Length: 338
Image (cartoon, rainbow, N blue to C red; front, side, top):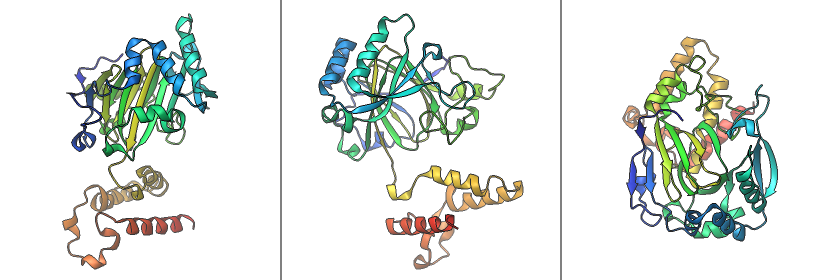
């Protein structure tokens, strides 16, 4: 484990019934201590892992899930294979009850395999659990997922969406970095990553500071959050997080949502387009475009466009409404087809 001096701010007495918009829109991470303590799955987990497994097996509907299997030599680190031609795990379609039984079997093994299920819709696999862990109407339109496995390590990555994650079985450790430390985390490929998002190439258990010297700066800014069953964490959009499952069985429920209308699109698409159109221009041109982007996007200020009549602003109007956004998207799509 990295030696990190700062921990995430903790809030007490926040439950699914009284969580506020202020918490859900926080731009810094927050631990919500005991957030899910009243949920039956948490109470079962507090008795034993076997009780938690029994509880989940009674509810599962026989739906196939994608389970990842790592050999013992990988020490739970979900990553690339040695030459980065693929990943270090094998994915198999399995029934959830069978995966849970396999996880418990690993407890008595002298060299346990890592078994991991990531980002799976609770409504599809465990609809009764989804019903029992309903949260505030503020999250009624969120994406609701389950993650589970034995001891595992998911490399540092970021998500565009806001994230409220609750540990309901076992323990989890989150190591967090502010968005500006992307340059210090040594990201792998953008278009080929274990979970779909670019990940840090640094092994947090044994960081190679000769190969990754700027990672020391990331450590200085890092925060750590350790969650017991029932604890939740609010992860703001774009914050990097390295996630460890610390016990022989760990189950996490999470909600993803965005604080902007879905018709606004995914910023990752803009990044890819900028790499196509701008990145390989001469430096002077890139710098010129940086000023243009600052003016129209990153340092946007409506007063800078007050010289244009409202009826003539078109896509300079802010915020874009849905019709304007769809019109702009169609215009972009037509340009890309040429």
